Image (tube, rainbow, N blue to C red; front, side, top):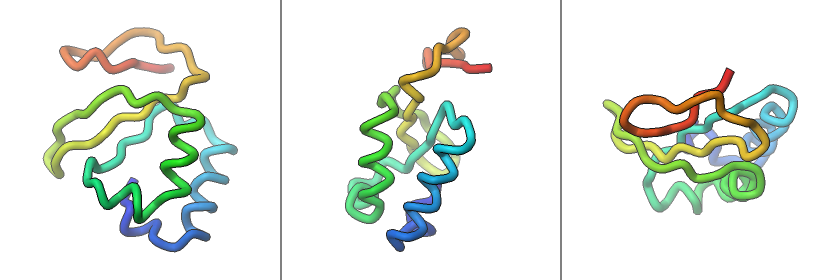
Length: 86
């Protein structure tokens, strides 16, 4: 997810509508503090349906990992211990 692309509220609403139609077990979000201000509807939705599973380091920088509270993981991934889904 790239917050700069979701700056407009209608785009945030469209993203949430898509998530409600398609299974999205894991969401990666940049860890920048301003992202919560830029994409408030996205973060509100994430807090209501997802669990904060921690931060991973990627080439683009650190990303916060949110996992769907309603899904049962089938295992964990590597040293991070992040959940795996099927």
